[in-house]
Structure formats: structure tokens, C-alpha cells
Length: 120
Image (cartoon, rainbow, N blue to C red; front, side, top):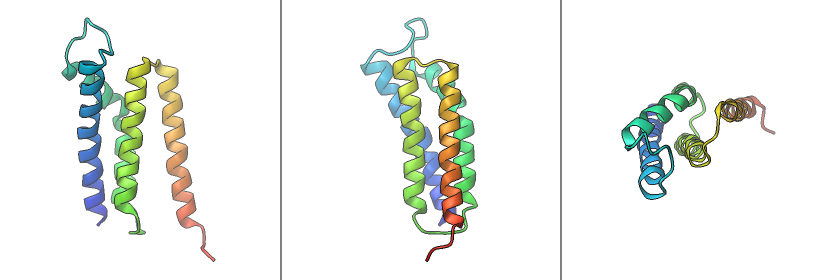
């Protein structure tokens, strides 16, 4: 189950990122006109957000509780793709990317801590 959720996360991350970037570049005309084409932006944004995806994929792969793994995989992938799309749409700079990394890391840490709390 945990491997399926990690693979689902990878498919949603790469596929969702391509769909979001294609929509923003082709239909909404976001981005720099000098860098025409989805391929350049796809490579830039996939690499910029890849550390978040790797951390989330590793946590999904090695997660011991097996409840809601599919839901977590979909939620984390959509969260990263939404951050990526907002960054591209609003043309955010590097400090905002660092803030996004921090917020995402805190979210992962909170989910990790809440899983270890005893239930009554």
C-alpha cells in the first residue's frame, strides 16, 4: 500500500505539474515571452520543487500507519502543484519559494508528530 501511494504521488506530481504549467503558459500566457514553450518552464519548476516532492515521496514510502495513505499522496501532490502554479502565475521570487519550502516542511512535520501522539 505505501509503495502504491508513493508511486501515485510521483505520477500526480509530474503529470499535475505538466498540466498546470501547460495551462498557465499556453492558455493564460504567463511567463516570459522570450522563454517560449512549456518544456523550459516545466524543467525549471520541476527542479525547483523537486526537493519537496522527494521528501513527501520518502515519507509516503516509509510511513508505518497505513490509513489514508492514498489521500495523503493526493493531497501532498496537489499541494505542491498548487504552490508551483501560484508561483508561476504570480511570478514570485526566491524569498517566496523559501517561505513555501518552510510552510510545506512544517506541514509535513506536524503530520508526522500528530501520527505519533497517543489516541485516547
